[in-house]
Length: 293
Image (tube, rainbow, N blue to C red; front, side):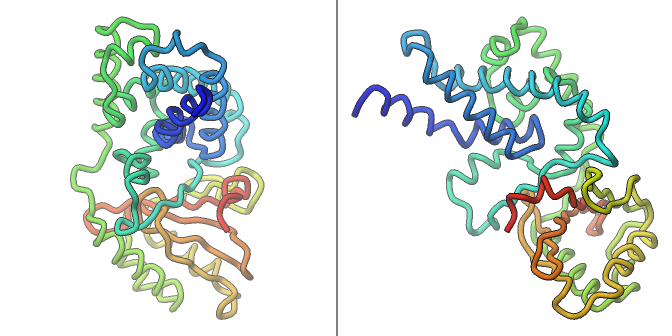
């Protein structure tokens, strides 16, 4: 095996984690893969003698590329039309996950968690993810961010406090989430308003991301009654088989890919609290659905 083959094989050992880090940092699978490829190109061009710890070197490089991308994205998001949501990430059902899937999923991949990360600055987000999600040591994070270890510890603690303060204390089990999703699918198909209302918390929220490229609410919809009427409204004039909710796992939770006349028009996923739906995240931007077939 040549030196290049060995180098490529070493990189492949880390690819899944790099993509997982990139997706959590950026919220885009395509961008995470592009940044991972950029990391590989830099890895390939760097003399092996200059790389003492491959994993640390790769995570440092990926982290810096993600931070640069986040800073560039800030200006783009100022002109984004309507609410922004991360790309839907289709994940295997728990019983079908390989070791690689477990590695890529790491800890929390929920949309609610990714939206909480959006409140953090680029370096704050990187430090928190590297330490609390990817179990990176403080000295490595300090090297990646060009800060002292003491400063990084403070950054992680501050980020953790901001994120955990807003996270649900009692998260629903996978079984409870799956049961709610099945009830939602049945209620929508039956156009049963009472059944739909029973699934939501009274103050539930629907966030729809169309990006100005697909019909979507420009502002979040608040309240169980309004959300129930919304779903009854969009299915009002459809015929059986025209509007289909295909069950799947999105961001490590039960969700649906919605097809109209066989074409993917949306994905929806849920945030569940106290065994009822607290939030629905609907992605309708076709750019974010391009990977779903």
